[in-house]
Image (cartoon, rainbow, N blue to C red; front, top):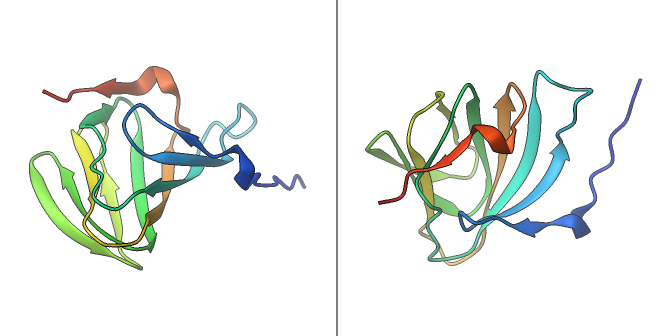
Length: 119
């Protein structure tokens, strides 16, 4: 049994506008990756797609507006949304506190599958 430790000090800011902490993303676990995302109040991530990857958001804190393939839904703590491969997506923090959520990707997230589609 392998236990993976999360180093919260390794949070980084992505080009799309959210902060990421990698929880699990390595070649020993090809089937899935898990990250914690943080979007600051008033920030909307860039519109993007993930090819060959299904992504699930699970909201931990805050509130936001997720736009998936031109449909928008309000998300609050405890909500979960599934994003299919190649669906244009972004999320906006509509609250006054950080919006944090888990990003679970299947198969695991790889930068080569990310495409910025912001106009």
